[in-house]
Image (cartoon, rainbow, N blue to C red; front, top):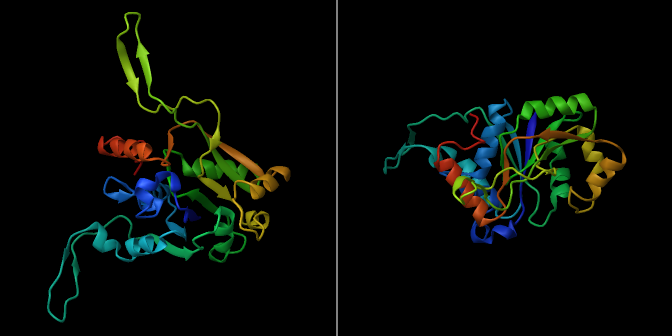
Length: 259
């Protein structure tokens, strides 16, 4: 299945970073968060990507146009015949990336509607946001979608707690501390969606958010399914969350690194 990733928003809640780059290009370790999301999908065998570009989309184009330059060692000769020599191969050589311009001011439903031409008629596709990570089983979500017969499946996740949790004994000694534990009991939309092609019929032609009128229409038509993911999930909406994800990556035990 093709993987559609929404990459065009302005990310105003992460102004410290997004003033200079689109949010999907904010780094976790040495790679943008977009790369981490794509690596998760590729791990489950989904390597055809359609990126919905908008705000500062030229930076995403530049990153993938010069992917070899950005990810490995290069030797240059400074004479007139100076083809570069790339010394390293990488696991992404079988990826296909369509960089689709969907407008700087488009909202999420409009962006998805604009890439309809890149999804073959009748084919289902995967859809997610360019700013959230998880250890979700993508193929299990697909199986849930297929079994439901619905037009769209949303991955329902538990948000991380806003504060760290502590275990304290009767003497006041702290014996455990967990930063941002998955303690919330409610479910929220975690992205990582699976869509039938007929989802496009619910988007309309107005510039609206997917999460408003289109989702309401799907609910009313009883065409919305939920895949419950009980594991780890974390958005990157704030600078603090960016730092948290970087610490997890630096620890060598990032929950989303399944590859």
